Image (cartoon, rainbow, N blue to C red; front, side, top):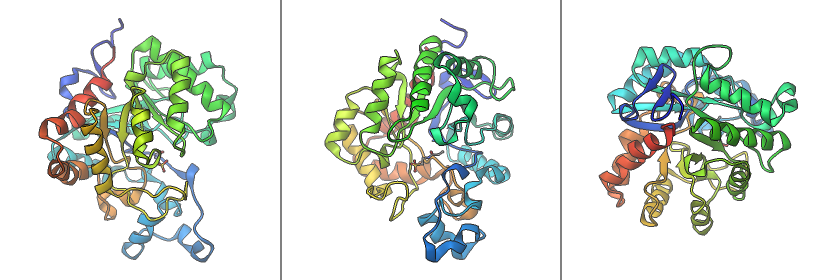
Amino acid sequence: MSELSGAVQTVLGLIDPGQLGRTMTHEHLTMSFECCYFPPAPDEESMAKAPIEMKNLFWLKQNPYSNHENLLLNQEIEAVKEELLAYRQAGGGAIVENTTTGISRDVHTLKKLAQETGVHIIAGAGFYVDDTHSEETRKMTVEKLSDVIITEVLHGADGSDIRCGVIGEIGTSWPITDSEKKVLQATAHAQTQLGCPVIIHPGRNAAAPEAVVRILQEAGGDIGKTVMSHLDRTILDKGELLEFAKMGSYLEYDLFGTEMLNYPFNLKVDMPSDNQRVQTLAYLVAEGYEDKIIIAHDIHTKNRLTKYGGHGYSYILKNIVPKMLTRGITENQVNKILIDNPRKWLTFK
Ligand SMILES: CCC(=O)NCCS(=O)(=O)O
């Protein structure tokens, strides 16, 4: 038992889990996604540096990773603050901010946003995908990586005293690289010591979530306290989804608001629509997984902010919840997905 036991750790300190309220379990408030810049098609090269303006918004929705400016969410702190105030107005209580080392985590800004908006913000410890690992990170042993993660939770991140309340999103590619495997093992060791929540970004292949879970299991991780993110673009076959669900992690549908014809990072994937996401949630509920589902928008580019004509952080509360209710998901089940499941996941053992 540690001092964290039974509490949730926000950037402003420990809180009683009952204070969280409706929680988006996978968002970004400030980050840079330059690591994942994806060049536009040759005949659209000029769009890489085009300004974000009305006539470009549809193109950005289809090609969010092919415009440099769009990847710099960390330039939009004022707009994000306005969005968080709107999120509270819409009935939101908390946000898990999944930015880890490699994509410009900024815990000072998270603390300021929490103070100025009243939204509970939980920051993420650990490392994003291999492409963003520094040489120093790559050279670390599992023990050293685990020490770094534990320090971020117990003492503070990035040299500050602002503490993380989850490990993740821990980035993995497909296939999982050696450096990512060490980070996963370190994550499991840190979780064993801290009793804390973990959240994983799987590689873009249907086999990736299971492969990650196996590594965590072998290293002693607590799968029942682990979230598998981005299932929307990862496991599209219903049979495979049920097989994965049996492994016991939380099942996260966190790309609400992302609708695009071609998913550039894996052209074999047909990115589902929001209606299809709701259908999948209803399917998982019918299969008995209502205690394991959590949802979010994973906002990580500028075009998804309302300032740029996007859906913003309140879209699930304002639009997706009513849709869920029309598709056979009860109010009690919605409350599990938005309140109870995040609360149980985020509470330290
Ligand atoms: C940092 C945000 C992130 O990793 N989002 C997931 C994008 S995708 O892998 O689903 O394309």
